[in-house]
Length: 118
Image (tube, rainbow, N blue to C red):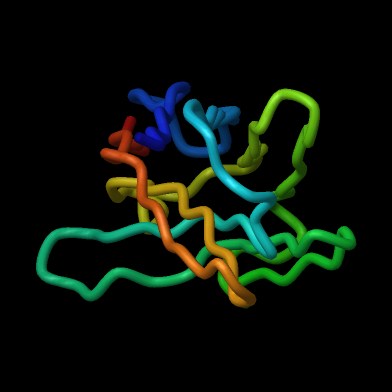
């Protein structure tokens, strides 16, 4: 059974930084992409940042130049460095591993709360 476990969330003041981590355990074929999503109260879950197996990255416009996604394949871990945080970044952050070629799969973490407030 594959499990994704996020860590690093918490309460931070505006302008502060956090580093989220997501470690995968279990047996699985290499993902084609890893990503971070977030969901704020009353809103749909949205993609924050993604990274492909060959290292290409993409970001939501709202976080470009502030957030950086990276991965450690040896540790089956994906990171999200979030700088210059704003109250609008407050949400539950979820990591996602997916594989779009056979055998396909998609796994989600349980989520970690990020609250940006003074």
